[in-house]
Length: 114
Image 1: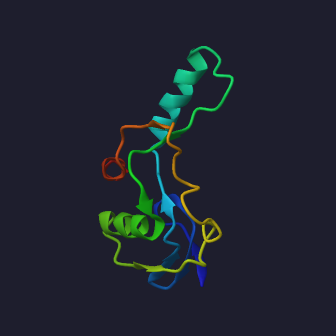
Image 2: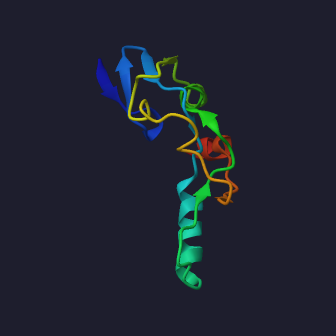
């Protein structure tokens, strides 16, 4: 077993296999984060929190499959709810709350530019 880095996220690797939990995740493009931060920085004080997120929710293991396929990588993802740093995260705690600002960049569109 080794620590690998497909798509910028560390995962456990077993040869041609990546283990990933199936927890929901809502990725956001760095450019969308930067736009949200600059908007807040230039505006009036929020005196609170601004939540931002990408427009789509994926199961983490499916996101790994999508990423590997898009990059032409023949390795595969095995769903293992005990694997990786998100293994202990259950439910929708790494997805956006209802009041979040939803950024425009879809994961597939971002992935096509990387």
